[in-house]
Length: 130
Image 1 (tube, rainbow, N blue to C red):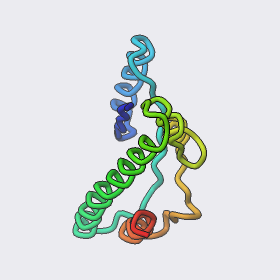
Image 2 (tube, one colour):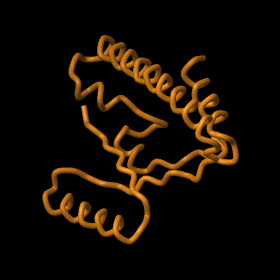
Image 3 (cartoon, one colour):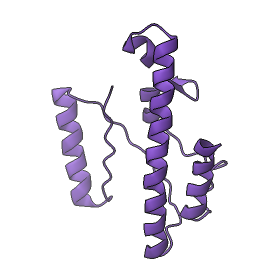
């Protein structure tokens, strides 16, 4: 399975130079690929609510990972027993995982950035608990 790293950095002059250096090294060595990953401006709120949302997201992450692993295991049993065949058939919104991550766009219609984080986490959680 492919490892994906999401690296978040502030957009100041020094950091931008470091990011450019990292991009140059990645391109030169060809050990990885990189994409800009746009994260929308979300309503953060106060620290207490942020900590609460963090706990909820952690639990949601565990649940989501479990659902995805179980789905992949079922696909493995039903399809040819090669990991490559399963990987080719794991799609997110009709595209393979790498393409989805590389071209990710926040769905503002479904997950409005005007909502507080707690509401967004609740909406996302309903997707996996139904």
